[in-house]
Length: 527
Image: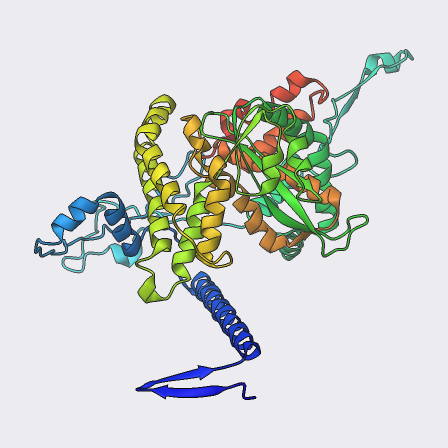
């Protein structure tokens, strides 16, 4: 019996095959489809990786997205304009040349005057031989930058005795000048030295070993171990009480932002050096003129860490899409980040071939996100109450249309577009929470900007040696970034804080309150 039979009718050939062969062909077809889908995903990932390495990182709308914006929200006008012929002539623009001068140098910077005069034979007139007279002066200012200046403070404490009592064999009282308290007992460190090391490491990103090398080149023998001991002791004795007070103040606010990033700690008990630890960030929003930025080191990324740090907080918390934040107590309302949602659609657009990037679902999704940010920008100058009302009137219809549009779109779950749509739908309850209050923001970019200094510095010092060092770094970072947010110069603020704290009872809450950034004297303000 034959399993295969062929008949030819006109130009069509019919082939009869067995069920086993048919099922094998179907399996091959499914395998080919799966491989084609995998190739498409790999090409998407390759184009996106290439763009991240060589392309612009901006997520601002380009011509393709602008075109989608016009079509999505002004379809009637776009269609009407297509019949009109217009000629656009580019306007001529001339860039104004920047003129950098020394007219805005802050007070206190010394000015050294260098006179340039003619003398002797140069003052003889070449025409008549008479002496030239001065008729004017041209002033040219230049900036001279000198290396850091080192000063050894030699404190001499004089003692005094009564010579009359001494002559008459009376017990002679001895008086001595009051000895200043050292910022670190038994050390030759000064508040200025410690503040300089802190700002060099945590503001300028210069690791202690580089500072050690620079000091050695200047003839100062100061080891990185000594510097590390100084800054950790100062953080423990003077900065930690202020940090804890700022933490209490933070929990009393109503709008906060949170984020986290990785940190490697080499000597952590019970863990391999390659294990990932985390630096958490919590900060205030735009609803205060006394901003606070706090970092906290923790060995993991579990939800228990923000839950513990935010114990007692009631209000809104801006976060990214990390699920750990979604299990916080019900007193905390999590507000999602539209910048992350937009980034997903932006990556979906960038992962497409050039010919397909200007159209399709990815570009349309990005257009919706860009429209929301465009509207939000137009409301930036309004009061919180006015912004709340305008968001409901202008942005809520766009959000409703966006969700309805997303529910009609499908894509492979592992594709860039599929990931963008999945993120959008899963995060939707948190993404729309910014409509609840005019003080809230459309994104969590404020927290990302605050954690960026740590990420940049991490590229220089790479890791922390011990958990104690990581915790100390978190406290120092917190004090420096909070000072910067309050328009203070970190070096001058840390110097003033340690000088003042030396003379205070650091167990007294009223004394600690005096050291908060908004109570710092004018000398600590950035110029």
